[in-house]
Length: 328
Image: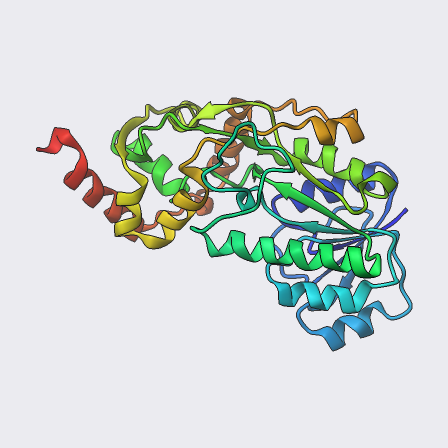
């Protein structure tokens, strides 16, 4: 099976690329060759900018793929480029959407693939919804062979799950307080990228996946308090948590707030029966406490990775001083 990944060296896609190679697929990556992550051994590369339609057409001239996966499409304009490039030239086109496109906050749990798409809080999610709508129209009207995949919070060894990343861990290691949105008890789902890959690669080339939508997540549920505590434990520290409402955080930092109100502030529990039915060997086996250990090992392996954002650090100090009752 000949597969093209547009992108292919990102947090989620790197594990999928590696597994596709291990399963014997002929994998080509189209990207600009600027990622800090290496190409998986055995993959071919087409170096081009997908945002330059003429250059992409030239680079792909005469090529046909059984599957095309676009990891870097974020707007309807990006979708129009892909429709122009791949209509009639692939047996399956996979669009990477987002579970944040689901109704926010969700009216019912668990979330299934038929949960309505509606997110008034986050422009990123609305763009993904618009992409899905355009692709499904192309499927209905022209038979464009789309499959939509909606990841939720998927991580690798480089990605801490909280805003501020290592700045928060550094505070924990210094014995300082850190901010958790809400009361920290909303439930969240974290999925290791190697677990995600098992479900995802099983969809590639699967005839029953064309024209359909799937989310792929772990079944492990953690509160945000537990997430911070497990990161702290992996860092050899204790988590001293200060709880601040998401709306209050949004007032002081609108960008952080939009990702909370549009995603992380609400409990998200996923029903994965659909992907498990189509890909029976999909089982998420890496719990977050283990993933957190991988993350901290990666950060601790190189001092250059342990970067501190002084502006965010100061924001946390200001929020804690203003809203933590122990400071009054």
